[in-house]
Amino acid sequence: MRSLGERFNKLRAIISLRCGPGAAILPPEVTRIHMDFATSFKNGHMGAKKFWRENLPRLKYHNPSVPMIVNRHSRNNKKPTISIYLRKPDASTPAPATRSQPSSSRNNMSKATPPDADEKIITVDMTEKHSSHILEYVLAETRAVPIKPTKEEIRELQELDAMARQAEVDRARMRGLREEKKREEDMLKRARAAGGVAEEEDS
Image (cartoon, rainbow, N blue to C red; front, side, top):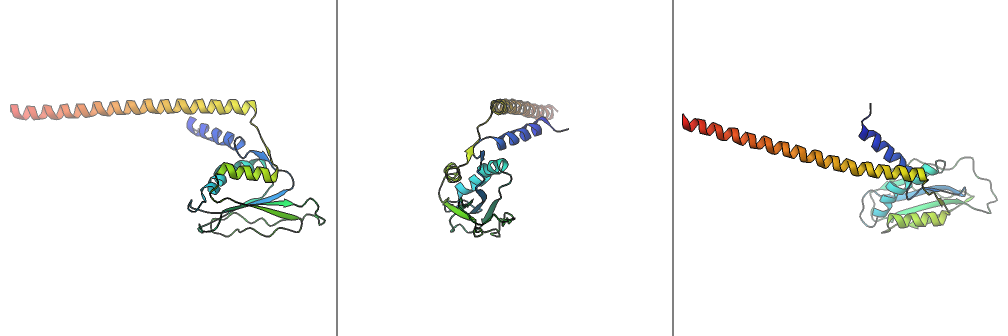
């Protein structure tokens, strides 16, 4: 049986994935999204990494059919970019049956591919940009529709916040009890040690 803490963490993760910055519906014109950034924060890559960790999962959750490829590497001198592939509104050629969908990589093995004949690319330079600003660019360029949390989700989030605050209070109380118990044990040890010395002196 799972502990209360495990169930709480799982529920919080699910609700966090459904709600929050990045929860949005992409229009059908968006065919794929590609991110390229370094694994470390240096040279302005922090915002890109935070967007990948915090916002992209929500975007993918609400748009499971849109490929979102992430190419990470160790080249901090290279600008972090996010490329949005869009189907051309006046495309005369039909969409291909399959598009290039390489797996994400942390070894620079999934670089951005050229657009198909019916696509165009919008590339955003993420250097020194905060993750919230990157999200604004993505939503604006794609014309995605943000998803507002429902009343039920808001209630669940409030309950989770209350549970988290109560858990912190409980942890602090238990910490205080453990510290008090340790102080009592230390005092008892010192008292016993002092008693032993006194017995030796009396003998």
